[in-house]
Length: 169
Length: 242
Image (cartoon, rainbow over all chains, first blue to last red; front, side, top):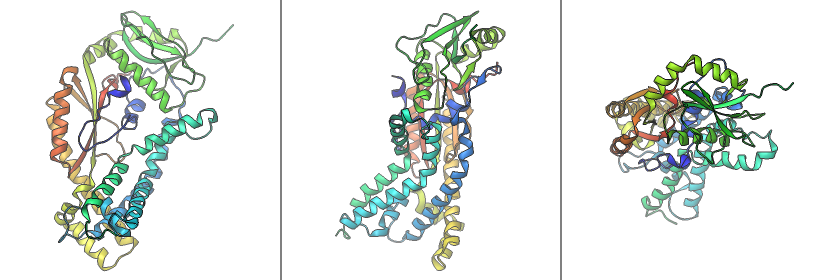
């Protein structure tokens, strides 16, 4: 029951076991007893990694700018950022199109990379506990995979296939 | 002479509340869970692991136990990572704050926490470009003289614009949800979110609450992305410092 109690059917959202979305509640909310010692936790250092976010933000700005420039307001009213980005290497379902999908995914991953790292740090998969590295590493990776951008990349791949009938090679 | 063993504290419950069977605590090799009675209250504890990190496994163990406990009665979940030097100090603390804890337990009895996060969405990009004069001006400028500077400025304006649209929509859904919930508390700021708020609501209102969120999300998907998580232990409503 417990880990399965997260709401997954909310529209617009696809998530699997999302610890990520409540990390800040577990770490920063809940009862505190003053005389208790809060053990030194790597995860509590989470805020110190915020510098990464700045980098991730600029990545996002550039992505938006790129998408905006590709936006053709007269002829196409339905494109989203990842779709537009995907179009860089030429749309369509041929090899070029598939390449574009890969490209979009990579970019999307890069944009959220900072956050992924943050989570990885928070869940402690940072490599100095070798005996658990295998399992934890995978889990942290899975967490990163569940970030929402991936969803947009996947959506882009899907809708591009249906959106550009003429360019397919 | 051996030093008293330090204990990890998961939460505070009423004295009559038992630990559900088959649950494990934190740590690589979790120590057995037990309750530590103190007056009308009890703390749910285990021996503290030698080393504790905020690992996914441990965070989940902490959270799952609080959820499992909540199935049998109210729980005040501790913040993750609370370790007391020994049982005696836990007992003393509980006795000295018994009244406040009982009031807090009453407050969360039969209720759950639902957390809602609102994020800007990219699907409204073309509407933004059309409607936002600054974005449209910067877009023209970036097309005329492309380059890193122009792109960052344009992209930044877009990000701000999308955030503004999301914030406005989030304020509306917040007002709707407040009418269903018993209480609400704004959570810590979370990167990328325009709203992070936790609601305390009657267990039986969950379906209705979720319905409001889903309807709103569906009707405003070009403005805001909503992420609803829960039911959660009542972290945000057990926040008393004792």
